Length: 236
Image 1 (tube, one colour):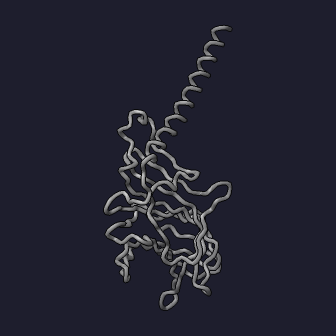
Image 2 (image 1 turned 120 degrees about the vertical axis):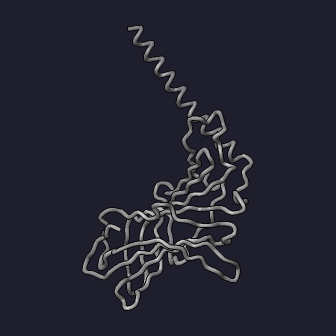
Image 3 (image 1 turned 180 degrees about the horizontal axis):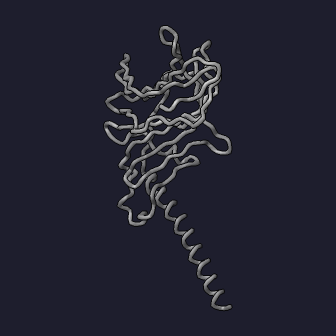
């Protein structure tokens, strides 16, 4: 009986120490990375930002107003050597560091926007549906759940309703920030249904644009719909 009690006590103590060690490591690591970090300065002369989208739900495709309203998870990834911790001996068992609850506002992030956006909302039921993960090598992943309304239009001779999603930096030119698609740039929820339309295919491209203020890197995701009674998504 006494032996069992001793084993139980030792197990409890080891678990408590492990929890305390985890908490202290995460806290100290976060503090050390952010203590002298300047979020107003980008990580390098030219920052490469890779992007992918997960189309979760389409609320409406409206050929009258020329728009699509939908929900997606937007992910972008870049590298910031200032946040690297792979040489920190106290962080050898940390696969990544998650920044939430305001901590994510303390690091530099690309000023990404949607060029053909009409309306946008970040979901924040319970908590903001957003996080940033910092990996040991300094890679940074941002994931955000959004509802967007963007512009669309028919092709000629009106056989397809085309809804692009154009992604770019608002202020950084192509000399500063370059966007690229990941190997799997678009994922679509299974059994997606859209009233009056069928999503026949989707594709990705680039849409770099020149304005009076410079040339900007731009990504283009294109969703092509065919008008039907009630359709579904194809396997692209």
